[in-house]
Image 1 (tube, helix red, strand yellow):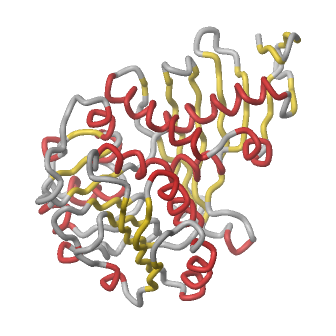
Image 2 (cartoon, rainbow, N blue to C red):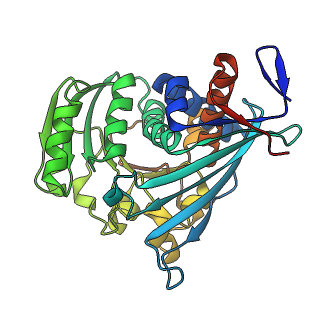
Length: 340
């Protein structure tokens, strides 16, 4: 049974986005993502591939999709499911692109201990994924970092804030299809970036040999990150469920690293090169978790061009949700409902 203070109960805690915002910090999320990646590498996290319900067909004809993402995270002793997707019409209604809920249960007895908003947790843990991956790949290379960012929306903002937690951003080159979005981004993010924020007129203008990483948070499927835009020593993160990286870049990368091999073979940046048979599972060097756990070593980053695809796993959501749930118990936050 759940326990809040000294009171035992069979009720499920209900947590809103506003509740979660009071319960967890970016540092909490970064630590949770780090532990969970290592757990995935060591095998103590169970994470099946996500299942997609595509709503874009003739029936029902909505410009939307939704994923079911189950996981068990041993260091929290919690299992759960995130139900999350994107609706392209939501921003026009003043709503975020993502709609998401998380269902958390005690893995030992199957009791649903919490139901909570998943949109904020999704945004926070997505921001943490590339940051933690970068700390694994760039060990010993210092805190200074130059970044090229494609996409100045909510995820671009969160990515910048999260990188600023662990690195000193000495330069940030940005591109978005909306000039207004770039202008607003520069004004809002200047307090988080130590160096200059450079607005670029084209995706190609973002590219520079001075950058350490390139990150894409867009809905683009036109493979706009070309092979010529990436220099030795750089890491490319195509983060979304879209094809932002060109086939040539993927085929010529020195190493491809993913968060979940089976999942990344069938969706996101790698789907076309796998479907066409140009790459196979053997083409993937390893997982982020294997590198975080010390099972595989990336080697000298200097001469290499690395493509890293953290497409997102339910395990990260369940790990962060478990922290939010525990804090809610401690602080008496959230509503309650007895489903049984």
